[in-house]
Amino acid sequence: MDLSIVNNDYYLSGMAALIGDIDKQLMVMLRDGRTLIAFLRSLDQFGRDKGYDEWSIRYCFLVGNLVLHQAFERICIGHQYADIPRGLFVIRGENVLFIGELDFHQPLRVPLIEVTIEEILKLQKEDIEKKGRIEKLRQKAMIEHGLVGEGNPIEEHY
Image (cartoon, rainbow, N blue to C red):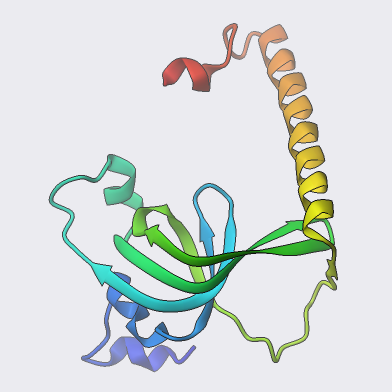
C-alpha cells in the first residue's frame, strides 16, 4: 500500500476509504467468524446518531452497509477448505471485522486442499464439537479452582 496517500489532502477515512475498492474482489471477515470472498459492488456510510450499540460506536469505524456480488463463504479447517456459493450478500458495517483485497497472483504461503462442501461441513461440525468439549473441561477446571461461579457466565449475562 502506498502510504503517501495518507499525506494527501484527499485521503478518505472510514467507510469512504472503500470507494476505491468498488468492483474489486475482497475478503471480508465477519464478527461471527465467517469469511466471505466477493466483489464489492456498493456501499453506504451514514451517521451514528441512533441505532448503534456501544461496541459499534467505540470499536467499529466501518459503519454502513456493504453489497457483495458473487459472494461465496470460505470455510477452512486445518489445511482443507471449501467454498459455499452465497450469491448477493448485504452486510451491515458493524458486523465487519476486517476487509482485505485479494491478490491471486501471489502464491499461497500455506498450501490448501480443496474438499467438497459436505466434507468441510462435517469437519466444521467435528471441530465445533471438539471446541465445545474443550470449553466444558476449561469451565469445569475454573469452577474447581474457584475462578468462576457455577453455570455459564456468558449465558447468565444475557
